[in-house]
Image: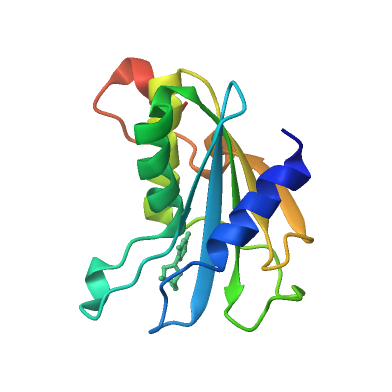
Length: 146
Ligand code: THU
């Protein structure tokens, strides 16, 4: 799958965010090594601390669809609900989501590419999870750091 198609999947997921409290809509699309896609968006809760980020949501779907150990790339798009035309700057995953992606990398025993985008998917920054979360914590020394 092309990067544009993966980013488009994340954009479509973003439009299905449930984020009435922050109005900040985030979508994520995880791609497997064989080209399957699992998507997610942030899901907020009136008890604010129970909200779930887009990346965690996509990784939950990926675990069910093809297994965390097969995640190769993840694209993230985000911005205020009204930022559909972009121009808000690429967003990068929060610390908790970096840990979640690092755990998938540990399971995969491979680094994971992270494509960070603005709301339109036009401004893009390319990282790997090892770059975004170096020396990550792991209970399994063999799985640390992707
Ligand atoms: N959010 C994500 O979905 N992913 C991130 O990496 C950072 C933040 C969500 C959480 C909350 O619903 C909204 O964006 C504002 O923080």
